[in-house]
Image (cartoon, rainbow, N blue to C red; front, side, top):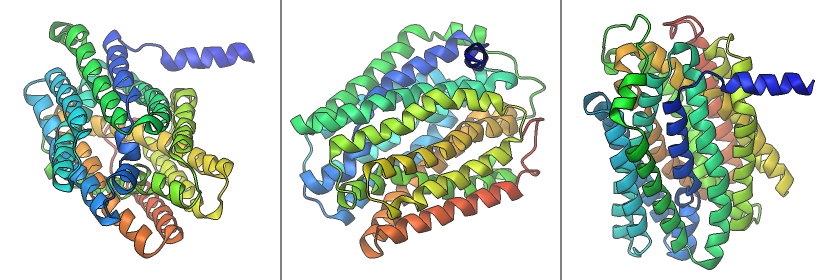
Length: 401
């Protein structure tokens, strides 16, 4: 039995090229300092004494910047190369985070967080574009899952450490987050050479002609459903920690380990689960994942214990595992030669959710209360899952979707 488990894990990681592992390493380093967004809503309201509405505006400022940054990152990846985009995004993000640690006025904080959103989110489509070019169709889902695994392994460290750094001084969140971004930029600049990337990137199998994602009606419908889902998911960066702080009575250094539940499940389960489900319909799996995500959030108001909170995190984490890596896989398969632009529009959708989520979430939390917020969130995620299921045949471009 143990031998079968070991073989399953070995097969789940087999066949990935060196550049895929380098991208994963850079993502791990960057995400090891992921602290600021987790605690930003608490920081703004409890330490800078801003109102809930002002805090929502600043968090949405991140989303406003990210809307442009995400799409721009995908566009530039097709034009100047994903490697350059990743280096500049990470380096400038590090500088902006450190600068934000000294800001106190509402307007200055808003401006810095807006610029951070603009520059930081250019990384994501560039990273996905690079991974899609290093990994052929047969292992592409595995490549995206590896990057997410590395990212979430880093996130296991960031919020936990951040919860304790807050006890010293909030400024350390910004400094550590900034330095890990700079370190990740150095890894890509020193090790991921252009000639290496060019020589190892596989030729796509029978690539479709390049096309604009804006002219792909089926893809735009897919993104509309995805926007609903990630707006629900983005509550983990705004109302989720604030709700745990206010309604569950958890302190910052207790909220951090709950993130570890999410990331440890991803690290131990995601690669193996996706390998086991590789022959299933990807769209059906995404639909199931959306339903699980909604269930996890909808259950949140019906308990108050730490273990119950961990249970809800576990449920929506399985939903995340089944939706996020396969979404990128489906999109790259549909995009063909236009992967950068398609992934840029996906990143724009993520960013739009970061704009909508704190405004809508904070408003619902303040006006209708936590129970209404999480029941609405659960229902919206389930609605998107049903939509994905209805769209499953129309999204087909290659076998396996």
